[in-house]
Amino acid sequence: MKNRAITLFALAFLMVGLLGAQPMISQKQDVAIFALGYYGWSIPAQALASIDGEIQKVFADLGRFTVLGVSQRLSSGGLERFIDTMKQAKQANFVMPEKYQFGEAFLTQAEFNKLVGAFIVVAPVVVEFNSFYNSKNVQWETSIKTNVTFIDVAAGGSVLAMKTVSTSGTDKQNQFKSISSAISSIPGQLQYEVRSIPEFQINTRILTADGSTVKLQLGDNMGIKKGDEYAVIQKRTVEGFDDSKEAGLIVVKEVGQEVSSAQVLYSSIPLGKDAQLREIPRQGVDFDLYIHSIGGSDATVAPGFKATASRGFYSFRPFVAAQVPLGLMRGFLSYGVEIFPVNVLLGGEMVLNMGRLSVAPSAALGVSYYHVTSSWVTTDTNFLSHVGAQVGGRVAYLFNRNMRAFVDLGYETWIAVANTWGNTGYGGVMFGAGVAFKL
Image (cartoon, rainbow, N blue to C red; front, side, top):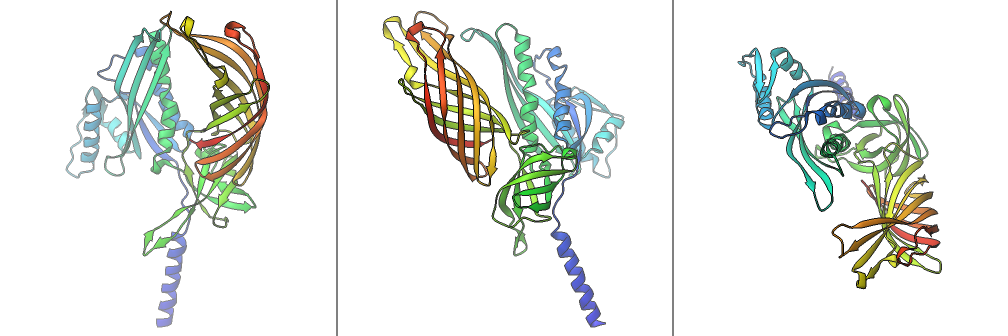
């Protein structure tokens, strides 16, 4: 009997250990989303017509939520009272009123109970709003700051997170369009802010591993996209405390309904079935800072930056770049004129990942303009000076999950389209280097 008891205890201990070692797999969460609160601020009603649906669309597009929309709008004071009421509702002696009033928002008992049934309640409220005509820039300018509060109902109404989204918009002729532009920028920023909350980040596991390619559980059913990155988590404990750490990085290259394929960029541990993966939230842009030397008879140095779309893309990735050819900067003191040249490029690259090392041929078309500042006039002037093209290739090395260094080699040409201020064409072999940050 004693031996049998020891055996049963050992088996039970083994089962607990195995269950504890099982990887975490994220499930969909229920969220109830209030309409955008803006009480106390004079925002045109027509500008708000679509924002509620767009905010709800953010959560729907993320794929990891089941969304319940709420038509009422909470003010800042109403939000505080709503949170207090949530906490009181968990108490045994709480008496349900027939109607709840939170600032200027009313909820019936049925509506309140429906919210209590959700796992998370989301309340976006405008805390700053400023819209005015800027005579110097000759345009309408609008800035909006929105606080988005995430309330954990299961935890008795505690605030899970509060995110601030600051947006702006401009329009040369119409104030309403500048306001609409600022409001329409909220969803794009909000999606990243939601994904940056640890409780909403996706946890999953490796199903199979074949060399540098792995299959991971979850796909479209949880909103996974090409270009998403996941950290490989090495699970370990020290004296009973969690001491897990990141041990590798993978990037998603193909997405199915329930299974996705990914490329291993690096890993310090062997990868196999059930290896734990955790989402790394990104804004979806790689931001490069570089300096190029453009050869030819009129060699010039051009520092610049490049923004490459990463989320939603894998091999082919579009980009936009801007650079300043320093050799074309000029000043005409007798006329009180200063010229600041800017090249803008739009193109794409094909990335071949080979672990930490990557190679990316690219091509782009561009236009160049002169930004002219004159002491004779009150406003600045821009005019088209060149059209151009760039072809090249990049070799990059990933130092860590957030940064890589690179060298560029190619050919670049710019053809003058205006002779103003002695404008001429230039071009030749392009060579440069820089660093890229994964935002």
